[in-house]
Length: 130
Image (cartoon, rainbow, N blue to C red; front, side):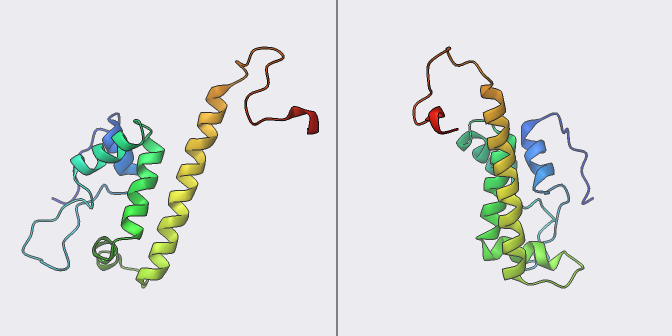
């Protein structure tokens, strides 16, 4: 069964959903191996740990890892019915990674809110020119 029932309330599976890495794929280099996800749970936990638990940043890192890995790109291409090539897929993955990273950064800025002390200018901000 290549479709598994994943609990999307769990951060590791939220990362898996954003990549997306929710269908187990065959390994084109060894069809005798059972189908598997692109990333193991431990690898996704690693991306989450690197990014302090931020799901979108972890997914962005995972997409960049695919984009820079010939082996992972081959696995994705060989299971995709569309005609594509590694360079095109790599560029698409990098673009998606950037979108997720930008969304995560925007959310971080929004979370900062306006909790600054009145009259105190955050370092590196010069409000006189705005």
